[in-house]
Amino acid sequence: MCRNGFEIRSTEGPTLARDHRRWETGDRPAGDAPGAGVDDERGEHLCLNGPSMEELRIPLKPPPGNPVVNCRVFSDDIQGRDCGDQASRWLSRYLDSGKTFRLVQFEPQMSPRRPAEQVALFPTSEKVAYPDIGAVMLLSEASVTELNTRLDRDVTVSQFRPNIVVSDCEAFQEDSWDQIQIGSVTLHRVMSCGRCIFTTVDPETGVKDPKQPLETLKSFRQCDPSEKHIHKTAPLFGQYYSVRRDGVLQVGDPVYKISH
Image 1 (cartoon, rainbow, N blue to C red):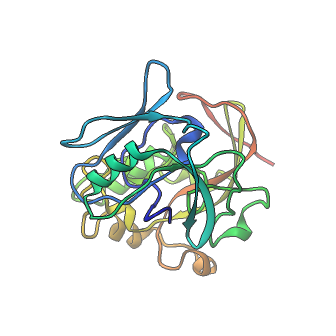
Image 2: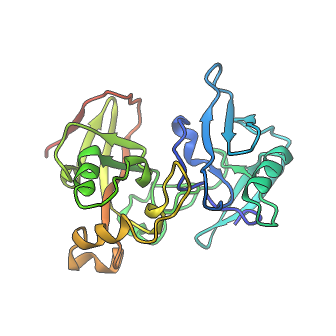
C-alpha cells in the first residue's frame, strides 16, 4: 500500500483516457461517493468532488520534483509519483479515518506488475500498474439488463467498472468473443471477470448493499468446474482482454468479432 493507499474503486468512472488506471489512493466510507473527471477546457487537471468538500484540482501529470514512493498492491511492489500535499489533505479529510492518505500516479518509466493470480493466462508481455487483474475489461449493456430482470432493484453498468461497454448485442454474447476489433484496436479475450464484493457498492452513492447483486450473480453465473481453481466461488460477469494491436477507439465504434 502507498502509505495506507489503495486503488480508487467503486466510484463513478472518470473520463481519463488511457491514464485512468494509473492513479492509486485510499478506500472511502459509505455515503455519497466522490466524483472524478478531467478539466473540460484543456484536459490538464484531475478534478475530484465530494459532499461538503471543495473541488480538488491537481495536474494530470505530477511535478517531476515530487517524490516517488514505494507501494504494495496484492503483495507486489510498485512505485508511484506522489501527487502532493493538497491532494493528501483533501483525501484524508474526505476519508475521515484518522489516517493520512496519499494519492500517487504510475508513470511509464516505472516498473509495472504482472496480473495477479491468473498470470499464466495472460501473455508474457501483459503488464499492469494498480489494477489487480487486467487493464481492459469489457461488458455489454444487455448482460446488465438481463441481470436486472432477476433483481428487486436495478443496477447500472457502472457498478461493474468496465472500461469498454458494448450495446446492441445479446446478453452474455461477449463471453464468446475471443478476438475482436474496435476502431484500429485488436483485443484478445483472456478470461472472464470473477466478481467480488465491490459489485455491491453503488458508485453514485458509495453505499454498500448487504448482498446484491453479488448473491444473484452467484446463482446463475458460476464458472465451469474446470476453472474452479481460478475463480473459486466468484461469479463471472464481463471479460478481460489483452491488447494485441494498439490504436484508437471511440464511443460509437462498431465491434467486429474476428474469426479464425
